[in-house]
Structure formats: C-alpha cells, structure tokens
Amino acid sequence: MARLLPDDDIRTDEDLIKMLEGIRQVGVAGHDELDELSGLIRMKIQRYGRRHGLGRARAAWWGRMVALPLVKCADAMLAVASYAKVCKNRFEAFVTALDDEAADRSDFEVTARTRKRAS
Image (cartoon, rainbow, N blue to C red; front, side):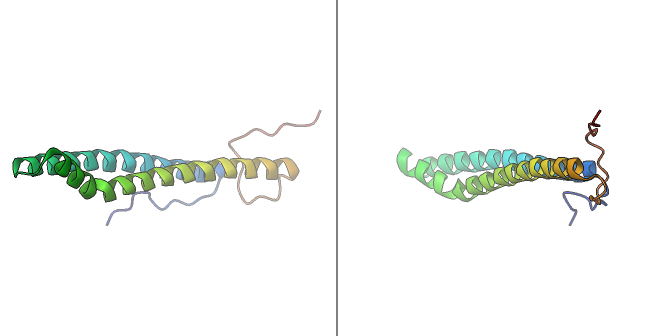
C-alpha cells in the first residue's frame, strides 16, 4: 500500500515543519472527502428508504444512522489536522527557545528563523 507521506530524513527544522504541515493537509483533505462521502451515503439511503415505503422521518433516521460512523471518522481526521498544527507550533516555539538559549545545543539546523544578534 502506498504511503500518504513519504519517508523523509529530518535534518533541519524546516524538514520537520514541512512534514507536520503535510500531516495537517492530509487530515484536512481526509475530512473533506469523508464528509462529502457521508453526505452522499446519507442522501442515497434516504432516497432508497423513501422509494421502498419508509416514511420521511424513518428514512432520514436510517440515513443518519448509516452515515454516522463516516461523520465521526471525518471529525477524527479534522482532529488529526488540528493536532499536527499544535505540534508544529510547539516545535517552532521549542526551536526558537533553544536557539535563543544556546545555538549549539540543537541537533537541528535552524534555518526557519534568523537569530537576533545582541548589539
């Protein structure tokens, strides 16, 4: 099975930030796709139920019940995107704090920010 994100060697802070942004984009795209599919499934089930004699309320109920797991899955994908954004922000704060304290301590090559020199 093909991987959603390729295995990359993380050498600089920008590499990790790029990977976390990729995870966020996968989460957002996954949410959009699953949300659209769940709406389509709900509509199809409602139509099928109405066509086969169910009342409007029962057809709508069954449509929601069938599509509900996909809706929850779409919400989980959005949570993945949110957590990736939080990780990215925290990593940026970590690298900034570490770089301010002592530039030689980090294994990361800090390239996303220019260090302010004391005059």
